[in-house]
Image (cartoon, rainbow, N blue to C red; front, side, top):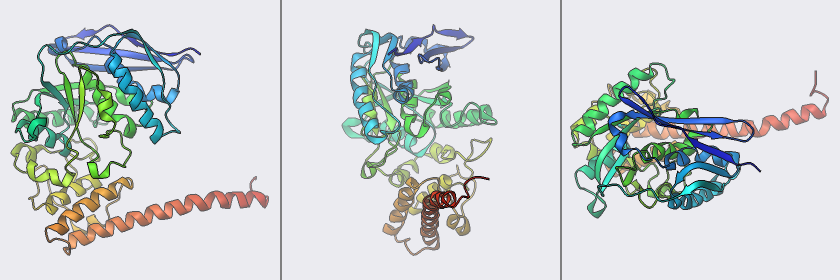
Length: 399
C-alpha cells in the first residue's frame, strides 16, 4: 500500500514576510497544503525540520489511516510522542481516527536552541492565554515559572482568513494583543496560516494548529506554553487542547507545557482584574460578525460577564454594556459542554452569597431551558426514524 507523503516546499520571501509550507498527498490524488507566513526578521528562528508540519497534518493523517512518509528530517522523540498522542485519540474517537506509522527520510533530533530557557506561547487576548502570560511574567508560578520571550498571535486561528472583514478584525485583535503583552515586556509576533482549509474537525485538532505554528520557531525557543482549556476537575471532557495529551506534541528539545489547569476560568478572573490592559482589551467573543469587539450578547460573552460578577469583579471595559435578566434566561448554548462552565460560575456566586440573586436564578433557568431543548432534540432523533420505518412498512415510503 502506497503511503501518504509529506513534502516541504522551499522557503519563500516576499517583501518583509517569509512563507514556509508543506503538502500532504494521498495516493488517490487528494492533496492538502499547509502554509505559515511570518515576519522575515524571525527567519533565524525558523527550524528547517519537518516537525511543525508533521504536527499540523496529524489529524488528516489519522483520518486517512495510511502510513506516512515525510520527505525531510523529523525528530525521533516527536515521532515517539505522537504514537502516544494518536493512541489517545483512537481511544476517544475510534470512529474518526486511527494511529498511523510515520516514517521520515531522516530521523535526527532538532538541535536545542542557542539560548536555553526561552519560551513562546500563543496569545488570543482571551481569559486563558491572558492568565497564563500574566502570571508567568509576574513570577507567580513558583518553580514552574517560564521566561516568556514571545507571544504569537495567529491570524487564521479564531479569526479565519475568509471571514467577512477578517483583516480589520485581526488588526483590531493585534492592537489589543500588542498593548497587553507589551505592558509585560513581551514581544508580540504576528503570523498567519491556512490551517482551517485542512479537512479536520477543528474542535479536535486546534491544539495541533497552535503547536504547528509554535514549533516553527524551535530554532530559538525550547518550549511552548499552552493555556489550559480543560481544568483538572473536568479532565473527563474530550477536547482539542487537553492536559493529558498536549505534552505529547513536544519533543526532546521542544517541550509543550499545558498551563493553568489548577484554576477554573472563574478563578482566573480576579488575577486578570489586576491587569489594566487586560480589562481594556480582553476578547472572548466569536459571534460578532465583522468586528473584533465583544458582542455582549452571545453565550460566551454572557458567561464571561457573569463570571466576573460572580467573583465580585466589576465589569471590564472590554465589554461595552452589561447583560439584562431577560437575555440571561434566553441564552442559547452551543453544546452541552457549556453547562459545566455555567455551573462553575453559579457555584462561585453561591460561595460569595449571590445564590438567591435574580441573575443567578436566571442563569439556572438558562441551563434548564437548554437541557430541555437537547432532551427534546434527542427524542425527535429517536422517534423520526421509527416513524419513517413504520410508514415504509405500510406502503408509504415511495410516491
